[in-house]
Image 1: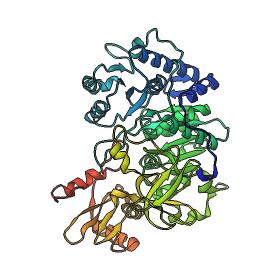
Image 2: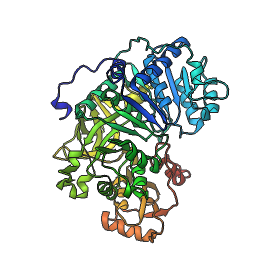
Image 3: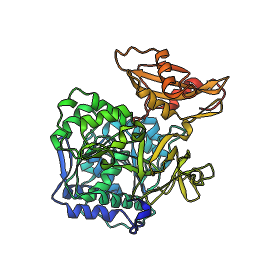
Image 4: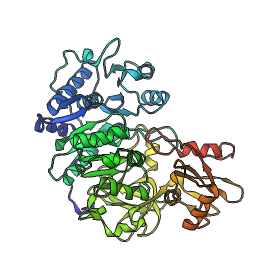
Length: 528
């Protein structure tokens, strides 16, 4: 069922009652586990309510911004919920960012409160100095004070706050690969819609959700909207492969989300063949294109549980979806997926989304035509924080423009060809780097590949591959170019290949193409 087939309920309301109802309905259930620390829903209710009341006591008002600078933990999740229940806006900060980057975000957004693990105290203090009257609280015991000291005498009954559907609830940031990160205003109505859509998919069975990916990103959104289902959240401090495998088996995890790079590490871990994956029901992959050979390997290792899709910070989770039933029939790989090309689809429109491929004027194009992927739906964010000009660039003719180039086939399946900014124009031809990367991933011996355009006097740009090989692989640059030409033809195949020990990655695990391009474009007199 897609958005066009459904009459939506009224999503234009506060998300806070959704949290309150979850705490009431599931009070006695275990809500979150992190190592030896665990909380029931009733205990998380009380802890987050105390945070909300302490914030209000110190002058935090509805609409104020509260940053959380921490690795995944129960405490970090509890204080984030406290910010929301005080009527505030949760600003998640990726602890893998550089301290300077997080300080800049906090200062630019003017966060009124900042919770931080003691290990980030110096950066948090520097950020607070740039903000007048900032409330600065460590999330764990610290040499001078602690969260419990700050919470002393705060009531465990959540305060009543009035927030509207269009009010901002979360302020995650874009990746910053094309400039300074932008704050994305995810509103109360966005999260109400996401929670409703999650309930439509739910089969009523108990769920154990592994939070291994950073909760500062999609993992945190999944955790928030899952609370209403009474799930048990198994929180890991970092996506370490051994810890993930152990947690899946120990906690009988049913649901996992991981980006492709983390999935590859799981597949390569020596404990994977002996791990019991029988509890898994949905293993979701996303955030970046996945290697088709590796996806087929995941079918064999994890079983008939893989789930794909498309979302982005500005329109989370529900742009497109390919569920378990789209991958498998009676436990076997769906016949149509025996063709690698079909596996590259990210699925079809969802219960929340209307998707179109549009031209440069945001007019819909016919099926089979390449253009920019555009989406409508109640999960689409309100825009960029304090940046109406950037918001206007991605909102045209009623569509949100994703910045992805794609195509929809006659059966409604959506294929993502590339990021618009990653398209390479060489000799007048458009080359989509992701197509070349997929072909390279199928070359025996290649572990990871990135494709970029580099300056060329003859072609304007030419295609270059940056490749990391498996240990012991016997491949030369010439071998790779020959095999790529056989698969892709001379226009799309790389003209040159760099073999490297490691590829640069962004703090959220994506290949950092901006860093790769800078090496080649710095002296070219052109922007990257």
